[in-house]
Image (cartoon, rainbow, N blue to C red; front, side, top):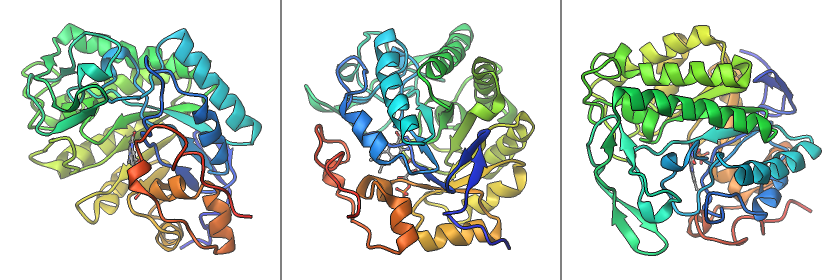
Amino acid sequence: MSDITLLSPGRIGGLETRNRMMMAPMTRSRALKGGVPSELAIEYYTQRASAGLILTEGTAPSAVGLGYARSPAIESAEQIAAWKKITDAVHAKGGKMFCQLMHVGRIGHNANRYTTEPLVAPSAVKAAGQIWTDEQGMQDHPVPHALSTSEVVKVIEEFAQATRNAMAAGFDGVEYHCASGYLPMQFLSTNVNQRTDQYGGSVNNRIRFVMESLDAMIKAAGSPLKVGIKIAPSMPFNDVQDSDPTATYTTLAQALSPLGLGYLHVLQTVVPGTWEMVRPHYKGTYAIAGGLTQATGDAALKSGLADFCVYGKLFIANPDLPARFAKGAELNAWDATTFYSPGPKGYTDIPAMA
Ligand SMILES: Cc1cc2nc3c(=O)[nH]c(=O)nc-3n(C[C@H](O)[C@H](O)[C@H](O)COP(=O)(O)O)c2cc1C
């Protein structure tokens, strides 16, 4: 037991933070065509700069890794310059910020993209479900192109280049999105990864893509502390399944421990006890996410279950969430109809407390 609360200062990713709260990575679908973050995003993120650490919306490392309408990337000079304006504004308010690198793999549609290259995956297995496109409404996910062994190495290099780009854009670090059924989790998941090379089959082979990506990103960032990872064991989102998630994720957590990363961020979804299942296998800064309140966040810090707590929907609806927690103030409810809608409504029009 400790007396640490959400409002205690912390250390993560080699940074001193003013509290133990992280703003969750959240796709908000307000980027411009071509994957460039909009001017509105400057205001959105600076309004939330009182978080101990902001994680950006999922950001594609490359054009091939982008699948959603109005999602940003961090590949071109124009994209990097637009991100630099955001990190400068957040830093000017004393905030800290990591860029979440999100490669969609097989989840996406070409109507949402600025490349005609196909979507890629560990194997040519189409995802169930559909995706929104602005031009054509809901569309099926395509059958993805199965990456050859040499193409896998190129995708890993894209993660490294995106990390260098994030550093050039002024980010304090990068988060590797290994959750929600996107490319890294597709490699981990037995239903999508049907490979017979060194990236498929055994648990150690299925985690290889993740481990090699992180190694390349650490070199690109210049320090392991500048790299974090998000996982979500047993999350069924985007049609991924694992025949033995406990074996996969305990093996992964043990393999991650010696890297000395900034943190491991664990989203718990459908299986209670996920945070507790991973925790003993990871030696390092541990952040938890998924439906946390002030009370459950404080309790997790006090018991030592977590070192940091990640808040998503509450940060959308309450830009000054740490101040509200400090005062015990009333919280605004979130409005899911504006999560992904263009424009300021539900994005930048929510005032801080008077
Ligand atoms: C609108 C919205 C967009 C999201 N986009 C992402 C994303 O881009 N990357 C990611 O890792 N998680 C994403 N998530 C999941 C959140 O990061 C978080 O794990 C989840 O909302 C649970 O936390 P909460 O209960 O505090 O909201 C998103 C969630 C929401 C509500």
